[in-house]
Amino acid sequence: MSLDSVTIVIRSIGERSESLCRKLILDQEVAESSIFIINEVPFSKAMKAGFEIGISENRPWTFCVDADVLLRPGSIAELLDSANKQATNVCEIQGYVLDKFFGGAREAGNHLFRTSLLPKVIERIPPEGKDIRPEAHTLKCMQSDGFPWHTVQVLIGLHDFEQTYEDIFRKCFVQAHKNLNHTGLFIPYWRSQSNQDMDYQVALAGFAEGIKHFGEVRIDKRAEYFQEGMKIIEASPKNPIDLSEWNIDRIEAIIKNWVEPQEYCEMYPRGMFVSSGSEIISRALEQYKWHRNRSSVIVSGKHVLSWLLIGAGKKLRSRSH
Image (tube, rainbow, N blue to C red; front, top):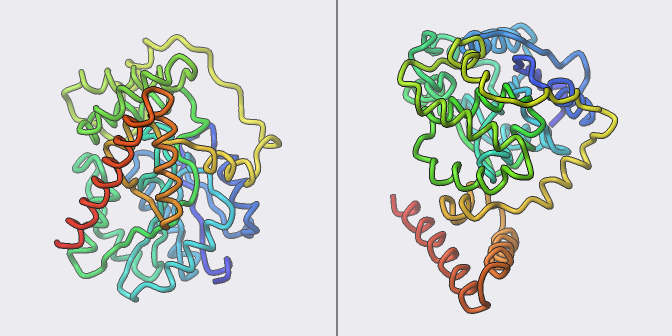
């Protein structure tokens, strides 16, 4: 599928990675005239602005990507190929990202919309403050009305790498309200990484402040509770990203060398994104190595076998429903 068929909207609130996000899209040979950056808050307003650009440009597809997503080589073309295999009533598809703070793959920050359906999508954007997940709310409404969305087995890039401390704090503050059930993943993982990466110290602080906040939480960086919470962070601002140090090969290398933490593997025994049998084998070997550094061969083998059996059980249950 030609890249001329897609309008790309980068949704930014001034993220440190905004320029890098754009560079990595250009590196995929997307025309500059097809790329737009919007800086709208709150998030529901940014959604509408991006959709309106897509309608105005009138290309078959509109790809809304958050500025905290760093795309891997060929990911846009791969998403387009998947999109064109969908039924004509499918309003959106999305891939997976390798998320720094989840420690593995998850759905976030990327939405490829069928442009002809965007007027209907706009009508279903919830009023600001009604839902902490306005885009998910909108997609569920579209699905209820006969326009489903699909997640495809495409790992498109990195998520939440190279962010400012302010953005990390804010996002993890929000995670305390969006994904409190992931506490067993977040806290042990972030603690284990915090001595070697200040990002995880800030993540812990943001999550803790989010837990203490009992009021409404909006996806709006201007909110007072984000500004007040950041005052507890004592860290010098990061330097701007040196774009000359980054290319699509570097993104690919990070993905290839990433080892999912044990906490992620326990919550997602088969991972959210597993594309092939060879990948399952690779993940099993990484699991074995992780345990082998901490226990005996027999104990490590038992852990990996348990991991595989749990994953197989989940897969069988999902097929039966």
